[in-house]
Length: 416
Image 1 (cartoon, rainbow, N blue to C red):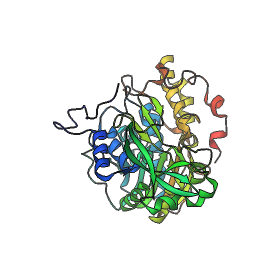
Image 2 (image 1 turned 45 degrees about the vertical axis):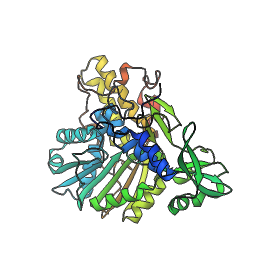
Image 3 (image 1 turned 120 degrees about the horizontal axis):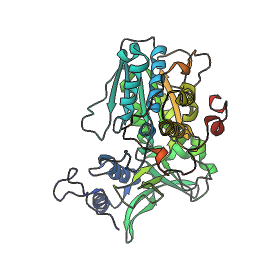
Image 4 (image 1 turned 135 degrees about the vertical axis):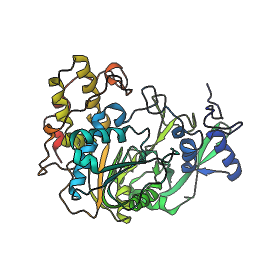
C-alpha cells in the first residue's frame, strides 16, 4: 500500500496540512532540488515527521534502544556519572544534561539508581533533558559543571550525501522524477563536505557514495555553551573516518528502518520510517576539539558496561531468589546490551575540559578502586513496559542462550 502524502495523525496537523513527502515535493518544485540533509530534516523532524510522532520507542514501536531494554543500562550510566562527579571534586551540584532523551527512560533510570546506591551523589545530581522534538524541553542550561551525555543521538542528525566521480566529490541532491523522489549529482553545497572527505579521497573508487554530518559543528558549539567544566559522554554506532570512508563501504552507511525492516531506500514511507547514518567519530573529535574539549578515548559499549559492573549484575541474578522466568527475563536483555553483534558494538566516546585526573572507569577501570560487586542489581518491574526480549523471537531467535563467558570470554571485555 502506498503511504499517504498527508500526515494522518490529527494531533500533529491541522485541517489540510501537508505531510513530509508533500512538503518535500513542494520545496523541490520551488528550488529545483534540495540537499539530502534538507530532505532528511523534513522527513524526521518536520511537522508530522518520524521523530515528532509518538510510539517509536515502545514495546510495539519500530525499534528499541539500550534504555528501552533494561534499567541496567541507566544504572551503569549513573555509576559512570558518579565517577565523573568524583573526578570533579564532588561538587555540591553536578549537572547531567542529556541531549536527545527521547521518552525520558534513561533519565528516569539514572536518577532512580543514583538514589539506590549513593545518596550523597543523588543529592548533588541535577538531571536535565533537552530534546528538539519536545515542546517542554526549553533551552539547555549554560556554564554548568558536570556531564553532557547522549545515547543514539548523532546518528539521527541530517546528513549530506556525496558521490566520487572522476576523483572529485559531488553532492547528491534530492530531485523529483517520474518514478518518485531520486538523487542527482551536483557541486557541493558547502565546502566542508569536500574537506571532510579529502584526506581519504585517493583511496575511494569512482561511484563511491557516502554521507557527511555537518550538524556535528553546531552540536559541539551547543555542548561548549552548556558545559563549562566536566565530561562529554557520547554513545552511538559509527567508526573513525578511516573505517567509515573505505572502499568496502561503497554505498555508504545510510539506512532506513520501517516496521523492523531494514532498507537502503530513503524515499519510501517518507515520515513513517527512521533514517540513520553511522557517526564519524573522527569528526566528533575534531569538532569538540575546536570547541575546547580534549578527547580522552573511545571504547565499545561491551567494554564500557563490563568495566562499570554489568558482569556483576548478571552474576548476581541467580542468587536474588527470583523465579526462573524472572531471572531469564532480566538476563536476556542484559546480555543483549553488551553482545558484540548487538548493542555492544556501539562506541562510547569520552571528552573533557577543565579536568586533570585519572581516566574514567568506563574507559579504563584499572587503578580506580571501583568495586562492581558492591552495586545493587537493578531489575525489571513485573509490569514494566519495555521490550520483552526473553519472550519473543525478535531480533534473533537463537541468541538468548549462553553465559557471559561463553559469549565474550572471561577477559575480553576488560581489555582496554
